[in-house]
Image (cartoon, rainbow, N blue to C red; front, side, top):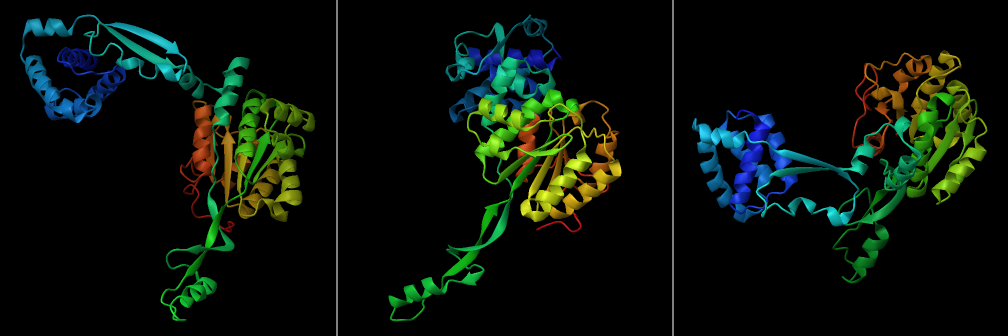
Length: 395
């Protein structure tokens, strides 16, 4: 009788017998809430059930009535009541698809059946969202392509030099609109009009490591890069291996299969070695310093394994860090228990990174999208709060 899950199931049955339709999803939520608050505090138990089981205003009075009757019987040391709580419950686990027609399946038998069978449904899509990319099958990779197509990267915005009319006071008076409005009042400017600087999205630059050590993740991450290119303006994508290769045009193809095929033909060193320092040197020299990285959000997707000189990599990261608005490093290995940035490349780059986040699953990429948009912090570099206190950063 002291098991919160058993008591939660018995209480839900009592509600259903009294005519309250309680779906299974609400029952599971009540069991979790009851485990968190415990059974010692009657008020906490009441509000745990009230928050998870009551969905309509007219259900409050029946809920209060059943709650008082049920919890009074639980508090009474009655062997009969205790026996009723200890009866077995059959659990039916169903891993199904995400057919919208089955969204209301939890309510099918809630009011008619007292609830002898507790059915738990798990979405295959939800399981795939948390599965490591290295464990995806070809069929799951195809399904993941569909899910990634729904990702929308909305990066932080910046103030533009172009001004737009505003309703309230702004940065500068709008003389043309003010004069035109004054014509209707015999030349008297009764109302002043204003203009303010507009905001434009910052450029997003993705540097994707396609070396052999990243092979289990590169196929999924390049699909993420394709979704970013076709779904957002001002996105540039480069492949990092033994050399730097720009693949933005190839990934601009709307068809994801043709886009990946074109990108694969373009990158000659796919699944080869890694020279991150030389690749970043080429990017800073040919693209970054010419304006592509200035004030942009630069995301490096790599495990940090590098065959080059770590000092050269650290110097190029320092230069890139000064040019960008924010520098994000995505490492699929960060989720590994006990992970430490022991690889020479990762250890050299980490002091110059604003955000250090995971990139092993769909859920991790959704968090990355929040980080790019400025809605979430993946982790600060050592000795610095994430994204704060940068020296020489671009505005």
